[in-house]
Length: 282
Ligand SMILES: [Zn+2]
Ligand SMILES: [Zn+2]
Image 1 (tube, helix red, strand yellow):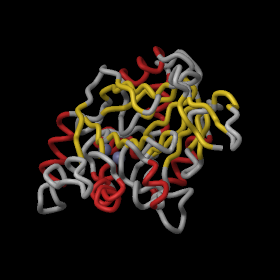
Image 2 (cartoon, rainbow, N blue to C red):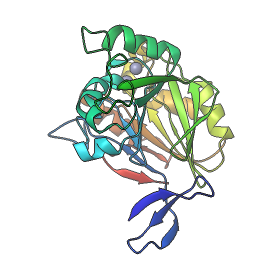
Image 3 (cartoon, rainbow, N blue to C red):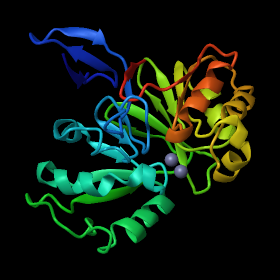
């Protein structure tokens, strides 16, 4: 089954081989694998793929997706400047520029764009692709487009609402909506009111993919590095007024077993560790 957008609205629909429309199909979210030998269990870097076409963060964009999958990606949103969220972007642009019809769109906050320009695409670490032209004359290889907290934007039939999370550098979590469902991808965060205010506001919220990087015994370190633990997640869930699935991501690889054990003891049936590489449908 292929996908296309209905001209009359934003809902994605399934179109079978003979052209019949099978009605609305689900929003699809995948945490892209980032480890070769244990792809479904170990997450070193972050890319969350939405409907195959929008990548939230570029950590595993080239590690976990083959070239065919990479070429389906139309937009990358970078939530913050940290390496585990940006590492794959230089290689992605380098390897795929020959297939771009026009400048590739990377969406990020003003400070994150400044960081990418200064620290990555600086003609030292990697070429400055804003001054390199596409082979087809379609403009520069990349264009950086500014997004900001509280200003929703639309891409590929999806509405994205950025919110500022509580992390050590400016970071944007994202609400994602189509006609049927809403999902939140928090990116990196410690305890944060804005995430839950957004969760309580979104209609049809089905899941929150949330940073749970450390086990409870490292709460002090987690608070310094501004990531959640199972216990600080539970404390924050008191702010939630609806009942989405709570899917823990960003588990530190060496601490994963402890975090999973602690999550399993939480008396909340909707809190689960992510299965990396699984396509969740909402
Ligand atoms: Zn971070
Ligand atoms: Zn991170």
